Amino acid sequence: MLLSNLLIGALCLTGASADSDTTGPDKNGKYWIHGNGISASFIRYGASVSNLIVKDKYGIPRDLVGGFDNATYYEIDKQHPHFGGVPGRYANRIKNSSFEIDGVTYHVLPNENPTAAHPAGVDTLHGGPKGWDWRNFTVVSQSNNSITFSLVDPDGEQGFPGEVVAYITYTLGDLTWDLRMVAIPTTKKTPIMLSSHIYWNLDGFANNETNTALNHTLYLPYSGQRVDADSILIPTGDIVANQPGSVNDFWSAPKALGDSFNDPEIHGNCGFNCTGYDTCYLVNREQNGPHDWRADGGFVARLQSPWSGIQLDVYTDQEAFQVYSCNGQNGSLTLKETQGLFDNPKFPRTIPQYGCVVLEVEDWIDAINQPSWQRSKKQIYEPGGDPYVLQASYRFSINDTTRSDGHY
Image (tube, rainbow, N blue to C red; front, side, top):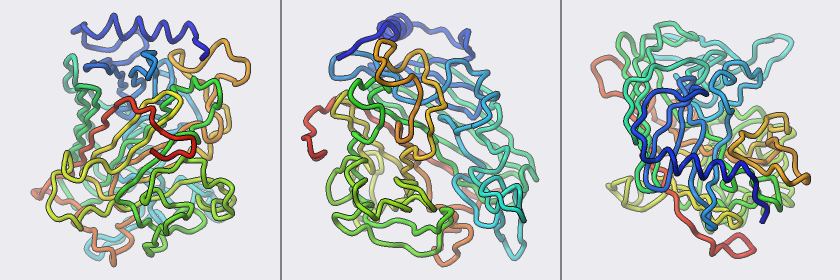
């Protein structure tokens, strides 16, 4: 295995910083917190995670998330890949950039799929052209292992009705990263659906055998169904089955992300002329009755790399799970100094197509435009009512028992 100076530097970083109680941003504008065997940095822009470091099966620290070295660059980069941020006020896509509440139709700003007739776009993605992960949050508090951000989203921003006050808390524990998102409408009924948009590569983009994440094994034990979507990934209203052995079957057994890439069904699976995944899988745990999402029934997703041995188990109270296989990456995004290999000319220090995977915990996408799904109490909130709450726990471990066929 090839090693690089950057990994030695990462080892020094985690070793030197883990015992520090220093708060506030470092010279790169990042706020660091630490747990047992895990360190992470966050930035105000989008309340984004910028670094997340754990050791692989060889004891080498790996930075597992895409991002930039300096916090200021997040606002400069024209691609804006939603690196590690909190998309809002409504994550994923809104059909026709509109929705109805109590008989009133609201129009939000479009920002995706432009046409000659609609140069700004025909739908809204992740809250619009200035969604939450385009804005600077306020750091409310920071300790050695936890940080909380806040945002006040004004009435009418991006076209959404009412003011919303949000708090995002990240906490590190024993190889765990917990997040809690709370959003409170203060003036009007409004849709709220948040998520966490992290670009994962469990090899730290340092695998000297492949620079993609298609070697990663994914297991979604409760996701025998998915939301059907059209050619621009807008839900059709249909819920379809992920038949055993099909391209979208990650529930009957663990499967490497690249295992189905020779199946003709994979072409167009993520929209027009797209090969890969950008898919909303449902989390069907209700069959088991009342449960504690932190323990009962276990994880809703497991991602594992045989190369690094790092395994990520995702626990959440949410009932859908978006998987994006980084089909749109083209090698133009540069790796951070804490990632990749400097001494391997085989791969450039950039994120290629399929070089990462995004795992988004959330509710059913665009349910505000699908009344037959009966999700309004999960997505429409009003002053004086219950707040919007999203909770998730990311738990890391070492598991190098994956067989060559991608199964455990």
